[in-house]
Image 1 (cartoon, rainbow, N blue to C red):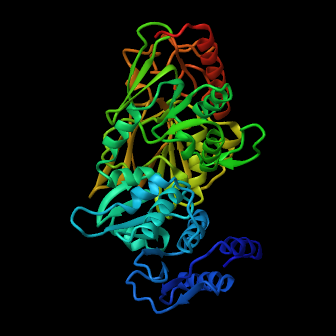
Image 2 (image 1 turned 135 degrees about the vertical axis):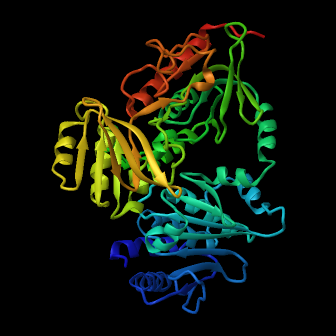
Image 3 (image 1 turned 90 degrees about the horizontal axis):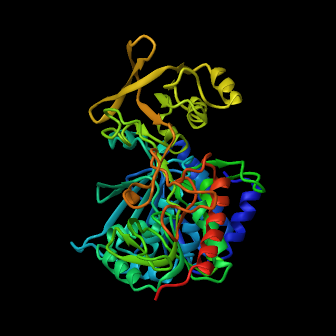
Length: 526
């Protein structure tokens, strides 16, 4: 199952195991079970003094295996093979079970160990993932760690490709998909703190109190993407009090698969890049407040006074200067059926959810680079791809268009307006579009629709205070100033053209320098 290089790497990691644990396999006669047995035997052989392998498991879901520390009451099970993007999740689960400490702040660990259902039972999690999903590992690793730390949390990680009957029965059409005690708990990327906060009902009030008690910042970034990270590093290097309040550190970068155009980084992916942003920011004295959504901005009464950011949880933060870097999100096509069938055939990430449509018919809405790339990606997995583009020609790079047109299982409709996503029994079954030249309506029968039509800025909460363009972007000048004294903006939420990571990072640095210039030139108000 593993080549020699992987075995060597795994052996070095397993040297960190300090406590004995066992793996208990529940196998059948499938090829996946044979591969699983080979993988488990390899793992056990690399650290036989600490790891025991048993083959007498009686779990109903086969093939699967549990990982359990000797003498503990923990429950962590992998159903199907945790390879691909999930191999790292498996390695971490082995290390944590073996006593290697996780890289998680102690207050979060204490919050996890204190979790207990109000009914006195257990938190039984089932998380469905695919091996090509780059959003899944965060969720898998979070729920795995929770199961290892708290015996009240029981986690089963299920590889959807190995359990197609379950995927079909539960109508799972997007991953990661998490069920808690049989009920849908959440879908899409979630980090550890986010999951814990959903279970810990008193967390929001405690957070609000702690945040409101913080001293004012010299500069406060609102947002956690490349613009905010760059601004924070530049500000902190000036020796001033710096903070970041973000709904999700990394922002939309977390949802990007391949990054090949960030100068000096030849190739990486979004989650790795986001981790690098956070690591670089944490290397400086920056107060990072994650999982916090800004609700209102209250301008300073006088230049040099304090600006207030009110948060959704009731807390508030104050700062002498603020840099708005809230980024953007996927744009909805806004037709009947889109919201109704979201995650039931309507998806936004072909890399994550494409494998769930293997052998099925799909459509991509959008003919720019992201739409054409999505169609090319899907064409290697699904039975057929229909690409629908509103304009009279595809807007993607010529090399991508030529590649798309060379694929035998792709149909392209330009000058076509999507009018409805249809469905039955809670699932997508078709897409209607209108030929804009003739007015004729068409129905394409299919099982999945991927929306790839660009971005919309996350600025709704600023309306009426910060000056916005007709597209909802924060209007900035050449030095990142907004219409409010002491308030600057950077990144995809602004009027700066070309929404690119490298441009957002550069604008973040510029905004921080402008904020510092404002601080040293503006007398403080008592």
